[in-house]
Amino acid sequence: MAIIIFGRDGVINQNPNYFVKSADEWQPLPGSIEALAALSQAGHQLVIATSQSGLALGQFDLDDLEAMHAKMRNLVEDAGGEIAAIFYCPHGPEDNCRCRKPLAGLLDAIEAEFDTSLHGCYLIGDKLTDLQLALEKGCKPVLVQTGKGKETLQALIQNPDRRLSDTAVFGDLTQFSEFFLNK
Image 1 (cartoon, rainbow, N blue to C red):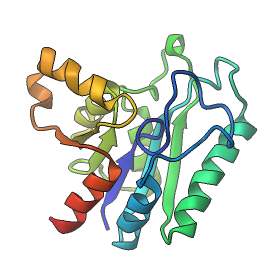
Image 2 (tube, rainbow, N blue to C red):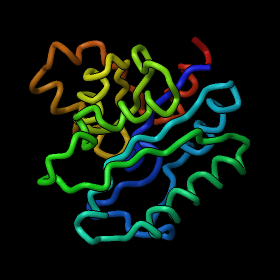
Image 3 (tube, rainbow, N blue to C red):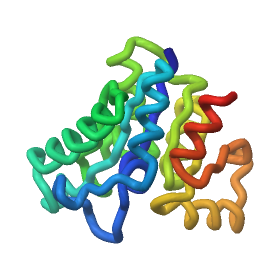
């Protein structure tokens, strides 16, 4: 049973140009919940790794974050799947923590929790920091063109990074799920 790691904002849910601060504001992207459920039903463990600097900046509190995550988990469960775990960095950009992407603290915690190596696992994100995080731990980077994904793709085209040349690019989680389940 493979672990698949997902960013949250812009990958699973809409990512407006401000912090998602409540369960009401947390809205899934079209098809994302069904894609997650399909991957889970195929026997894969879905793990969310997300930076949530809004906590440190006072944009929302832990109860709000837990409500957002409960909503996401419930939607996936209602669709027949399961999210195995959610790991988040509560720090702001200036906190110099090890868990803020692209540093590997979140993935280190996932490896410890699941007592496994994430080397070779897929890591799906929409930002350059997600892709850099994947490389940090030997994961397979996947870019979805939702959220900030189109901007990230343009930045990679304009400033190619040889280390990211093998990044798989998909329109959204539905396309990734279909590819992954049919390979």
